[in-house]
Image (cartoon, rainbow, N blue to C red):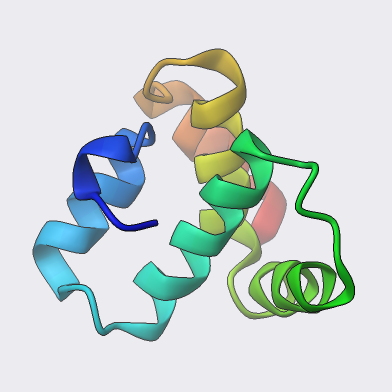
Length: 87
């Protein structure tokens, strides 16, 4: 993902601003978003990277996934439900 303007997930944008581009979480979430937006990139490397991101950051991956799929930020209520499910 060459351009930050391409990012659709408000959660990912927030994390990017907080942590910077070279943060492992941000990198994993950028991979997730790109994969969700372009699922034709289903080569073995992309699949391994997705699996690793889901394993390492399940809550955050679900947040970004929902935002990309719905086209809107998740609500506080949705966030609390996800946190309860992942704890």
